[in-house]
Image (cartoon, rainbow, N blue to C red; front, top):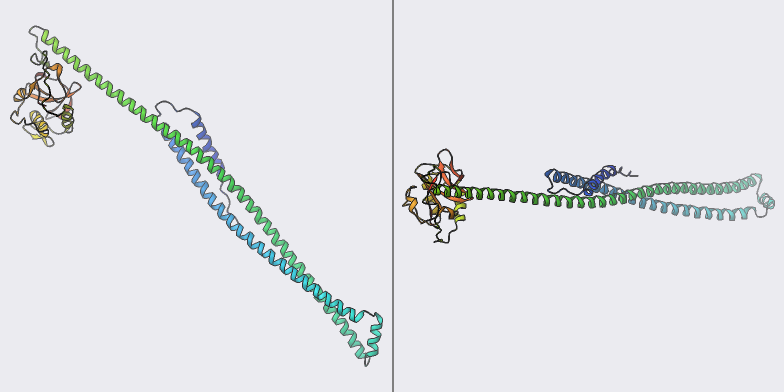
Length: 387
């Protein structure tokens, strides 16, 4: 008889996992869930999935055992039916033999001792008489032996039937135990799946909150940067106004008198936005500065940088290939009205206003192309708008 496989003991670790999940789901997630929270929930979800996989594997083994035992039970049932048929056949043969013996015994002994006398009278001699009596006894003995044989056969088959029934009962008991384990595992798997759904929901919520927190911080950082840039621009404008108001005062940095004050804010002459000019120019930040160069990727100087950026938008400034000549291109802009994309001219240098109080420029051989210096890093001589 095939023995059933031993069921794995999975209930203890599953209950432990369930306790962990319950503790996590019972407590509210903190605002701005951390990576540690997400990692913890991810690990719990994976642990539950591993437990579910293990339980499913155990369930497959149990179902295989149940199937094998069901086959053995069916075989035993057939063997019991065969034994019952053999018993019935033995009983029928025994009864047939018994009936035949009764007829012979009746024929031979129904008249008691008279039959013996008749046998004696009919015998030719005493030896014949003994032979007839011996034959009669031999028939009786043979009948008795056959009856005993049938009875023994019947008893033997009955014992075999009882053994088969005992084996069948044992198999049915094993089948019941396996069915109970199957039901317990099915229940546990359902519970773990429900717990995993809860953990996965908590994980999704944690990720959502983490994303919201990251976005909030990003916006706060951008807002702070914008505030600082606006403050820098306002401070620079205030400094320029103070410089203009001071009598005979001068400074090595800030806006010159010629660009501060007034209200020069010409309307656009193209459909090109200053933000698109700045976005294109920023792509080359980090590339090298090369004096006299005209390549945004291989190297250029400050005026070459400005000329090549605007060339990309179809604006030809090649006739003004130095910072001094670029002071007269396009239209004049007041410092207070400066917008992204405007050309900012200094003594011996030129850049493009990027907004937020800084410029994008081919700064120097050491720094290369940058976008981090304030627009008032040098004294501004002119601001020109060509778009």
